[in-house]
Each structure stands twice: as C-alpha cells, then as structure tokens.
Length: 130
Image (cartoon, rainbow, N blue to C red; front, side, top):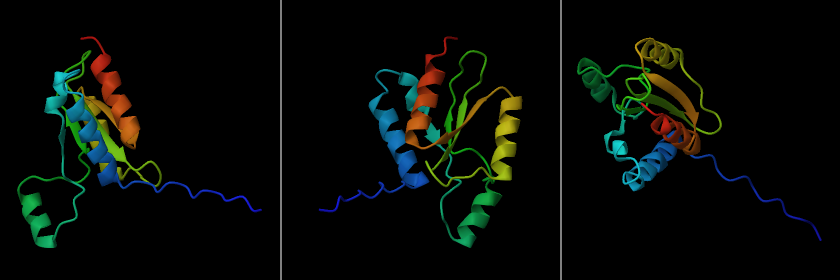
C-alpha cells in the first residue's frame, strides 16, 4: 500500500491575507477599540490605465504601505504595515523607501508575511504602553 502525501495548502493571495486581517480586526474591536481606525490603502488594486491615471492625479502614490493604524504608542505616531504573501512576496524599492521615510518621521513600520504576522504586529503594537 502506498502512502499518500497531502499536497501543501495553497498560498493565499495578498488580498485574501488582508481580508483575513480586517475580519480579525473587526472581531477584536471590543478588546482594542483603536482597531476601528485601522484602514487599508488601496495601492495594489488592479485597475484600468485610465482609472490609474485618475488615481495618480488625485494623489495615489506607488509604494505606500497597505495598512495603517493611526494610533500613537510609545513615541510612535502610528503603525504602517506592508503586507506580503506568506511565500513569494517581495518588497519593491518604492515600498522600502516609503517605509524608511515613515520611520524617519516617527511611525512604526512592519513588513508582514501574511495575516498571522500582521495580526501579531498589531497586537504587539497595541500592547505597548504609552
């Protein structure tokens, strides 16, 4: 009898990982009311060229992190998260530059590989005493 090897679970898309993060945040607002202020920055959406040009004219900039929690903690002005897939996600030069600039101006910045890493980053950040 041959033993069967189970296939590895599929790697979720960055979009799905982010959806999990916001579902978790909504269900934990009673523990941390600050999570109500958590928001996404829709830079990664696939849109038409016309819509992209319109968005750029309206201020959309490449490299801005995916998620922001504008709540001060322990000397930081807020938390930015660049969310990546668990496997295969890479930081672009524009993203690295944005993270450096935000850190220079007093924000905590995290690159998180997947929902679980992003969740832990938020929990750790919110657990810091002011």
